[in-house]
Image 1: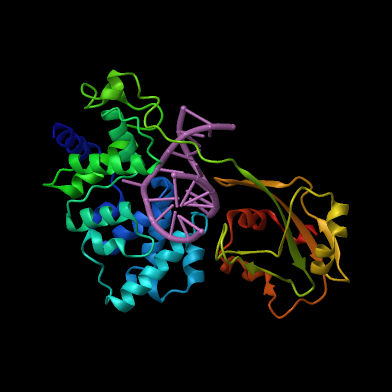
Image 2: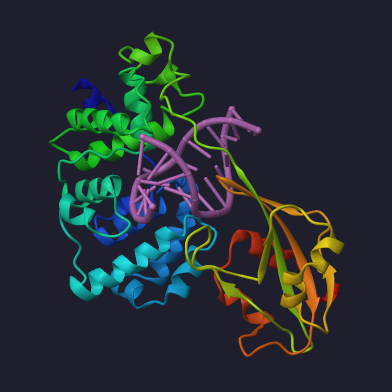
Length: 348
DNA sequence: AAGGCGGGGAG
DNA sequence: CTCCCAGCCTT
């Protein structure tokens, strides 16, 4: 119990002044929690401001189009979060009269809300006694109690959830949950934790056992897949081009990109241009020029994408063609946005 | 139980 | 380069 009181005490004097700490509105807490999943506070903050500005209430978010929502989310990654956010907003506005479930169990039913987020909203907004377990909590508990169970296994998840629940301050779940997370983010950091000034440094088992550097234990995941993307940037006298929306499974679901031809390996320009698939895609009376000889390397968590852009000068395009100056209305991957930022049609 | 899903920052 | 971030969903 001393553990919990120390954390809360530390929190009250060290907490950051974050915008979502100014409110207990479930809509804004929900918004912040979804955005901060696997995302640093500094990275999510500008997006939070933009969303609150554009969609002050769950009804505003519900009434927006998916394209608007994805566009505002562009660059934040894990785009299923934005799609689920939008779907849940429509559900709450339409089916629940805009009122969020007021407990863990009810929140857990919502799309995009898992154990962590349901616990966070329930405790922060309604002071329900449910413990959050995020990356910070894993680290703080693993170190303080010198728990060596890998955190990314079912056994580890169960063990840490139980431990977190035991340590929860039932008198103030909201403050305690935020305290342990903030403590993990600022004091008990992944690298170079501030053990010298830590209020728990006389009782931390990992510190006593010199295991700070190896805790928490996390099993490594698989290898990185290499992919070779060839984007066809159509151009013509009408200054229009083609964009396709990605559908189905895989990365960037719902986002737009230029027509894509993926190859198993890096082809030479001659090989690429002589491929039947490519000739069919660019058409008969077109000239094709490779924009970047050196592929752009775009690194994702589990994929490395080697991207080349091919400028295709062609005649009139189909009716689905988009004016070049309208591209900015479409949500696109950062890889595409970077190209657009650098590319000037006058270069051609 | 394992894999997929972004992008960026720190060390 | 590796690690990891206020995780969730699907298979």
